[in-house]
Length: 336
Image 1 (cartoon, rainbow, N blue to C red):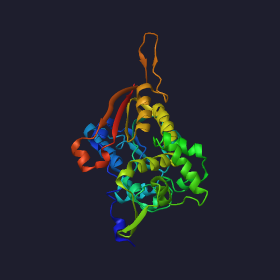
Image 2: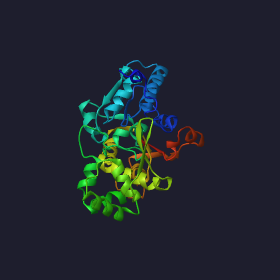
Image 3: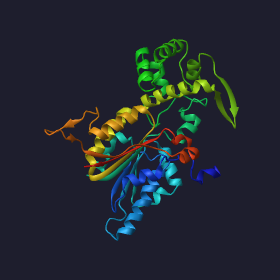
Image 4: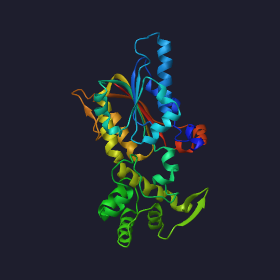
């Protein structure tokens, strides 16, 4: 048995703007909360601590420190939560599911309304730093990229079965790649000779030449030139979003959250790229997915939310400690 297995996976994920996010939720005594992205457990732990603190300060005994439901479709997150001792909290419930099924599981647990919801849409460090998952172009690995490894299409399935037009669409929309069309053409031409099964197969196509490999601490790494890393990240992002239907899941979760939040309840969302941030921004501003602003007879804007935080970014000090927080934006709103 690996002796390190009993140690908490402290580098699973470092949450961005942790204090700002928890303050934004304005945790209430006995409140019911949902963390739809358990990940490394940082936000879940902080919410549980805040529930305990406000409960002790309130003098109210009946609600037993409120309740927190944490969603994650990756069972690695549950294992990490156990290592951190999160499962010892009686008022915590893990939900092994994509957050698009938020409404279904709240119905299952008999929850009609919630006081707050948190979503950290960033991919955990764990996924990028775990070579065999195939999320990173840094390592030689199978082209998988599934958050839920129990089923569904892999990145390899998409690369080998989607038409040239479909590939160009996801590379353009989800990766915002100007070279989407010529790249999709090269992918189709290459797969005619042999299927694309590993990260180095895709990296070589993007580079236009065979990528060099080297071993580092027992792991086979790929030597990607610094000048190519930005486009490479966009390609891998586009595939990951498609594999996990991230935009579709986000839209479904937001609509469910709007119905579940009680008046005065708060929603706090951390976004990391323009696609998801645009969806969240428009939704919190308008209360609908297309961002259409509706007004009453007198010209007053009709929206279910009062926006409290319009895109807070991490401080310089935090970015120095956690460089991956650089692209994070925090948006907070309160149900009217």
